[in-house]
Image (tube, rainbow, N blue to C red; front, side, top):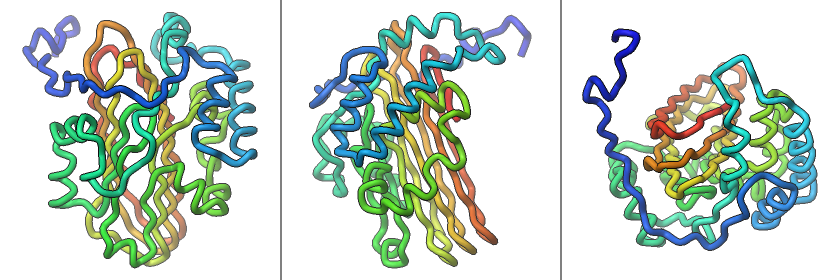
Length: 279
C-alpha cells in the first residue's frame, strides 16, 4: 500500500458492526476515574476487602505514573479519559442460559453470530456487554472433567484461593500505567482453569462488545492451564462508530504449567475512534 493511501481510499471502510442497541443500563458511574468510582465498582461486585485495597493501591500507582511517550501520540488522551464512563452495568446478573439474557442485549450478540457459533463448534462461550459479562456457558462434558470457564467475578467468588494465587503474577499492577488503571477498575473478563491432563478438543471463546458512547471497557482475563493440559481460547471485540472517542484497556494473564500447551487468539475489530491499550 502506498504510504499516503488509506483504507478508505481502497474502499474497505465498510464496518458491519456499526450498529447500536437501545439498552438502558441498570447502573452507570459518573464520568472519569476517581476513588469514588473504584469503590462503586468494588461494592457492586461485593468483593472481599483485599480486592478493594488492591484496587485503591492500583489507582495510586496509576496516578503516579506519567503518560507513556514511547508509543503512539497520547497527548489528547487525558481529556478523553475525563469524559469516559469507566463502569456501566448492563443487567443485574450474569446468565448461564441464553434464553434468560435480556432481549435487547441478546439481539446484539445474535447479529454477531454468537449463539450459532456456540452450538456448532465451541466448548464454551462468554459474552461481555459494556462492563460486565452477561452470559457464560460451558459444555457439560468439560464441566464434568473439572474445567472452569466462568466470569472473572465468579472466579474470585467461587475459587478464591486459586484466583488469589495467580492474579497479578503475570501482569503486576506496577507493570505500566494502563496495567495499573485496569487493576483499579477491572470489570468483566473470563476465569479459566484447565485441570491436569485435560485436553479441550474445541475452543473456548469470549466476546466483548462496547455499545454505549464514551464507554471504557476494562476486562481482566485469568487463564490457568495445569500440568499436561491443552486448550485454545479465542476472544473477539467490536464497538459501533461514534463521533466521540471510546477507550479499551484490557489485561490478560495466562499461566501455562509444565508440559501443558495453550493457544490464545484475539481478534480486535474496533472502530477507528477507539483507543486500544492492552497488556
